[in-house]
Image (cartoon, rainbow, N blue to C red; front, side):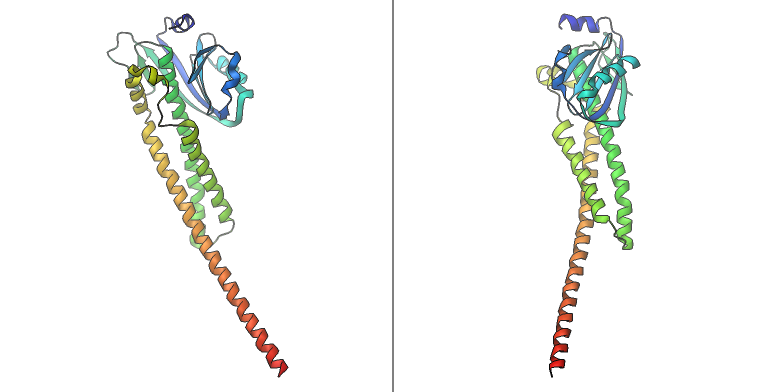
Amino acid sequence: MPAQLSTLFEGRRGMRIRSLLIGERIDIKALENTERLAESPLVVRAGARGCAVVFRYGVTVLFEMDAMEQTAFLRQLSHLIYEPFDVTETENASIVVQPDAAAETVLNGVVTLIAVDIERIQILADILAKSVVLEYYENQIARTIENIDPLTRDLERGHYGNTSKNLLRQIGGTLRIHQKMVGRVEVNEKPDVLWDHPEMERLYMRLEDEYELSERHAALERKLKLISLTAETILDLLNTKRSIRVEWYIVLLIVVEILLTLYELFLHK
């Protein structure tokens, strides 16, 4: 471990962790002037004896930073955040260091480690960042389902109104969430640090199991498909109704045309 990292983590027996989803995206390339401790994911010095892991998809995970240090660090990041959120999604955890522990464990947000090093910091940050993003998407999808329910009720009663616009909005939001999950966050992808440190695989799997990343991701995928199927079905019904209405308009025009023709023939005679 480099000298500055040894100093940073020296003598630690516990650490506080806070994961925050603060915006749509963070320009991590602009953090060139910070003291970088590691790359992919990016780890920088922050606070008196802490560090921060910054992710491009809008999450930063803070290690051992008090409230004032967190506020100061987030203020430094503010100009690098694209589309910052009004309400920040957060998730907290803690580290307990037990060098003589038989195994590294995770239980109820408390992670027991035999040591604190940069690789473990990166793995923990990766898990917590994905977890807070999943929580945000879970809340978004729950609201979408609530919004679609009255649309289906209105359709059942025959009250269409602006149903098409609302449905298109819901479909657009659903597609956007899916694009973020697959294209940006890559929830099911393992962090790059595991390629160089396969011995950390067991810790990663325990963390992933504790935070149920795979299960939550699969549940979100099912809900996204359900929302898309529901919205597309309703739109198909609306389009069919419009087609039938247009056909009736055409039939009516033909009938009117025939009546006018017969009327002119009657007058001519």
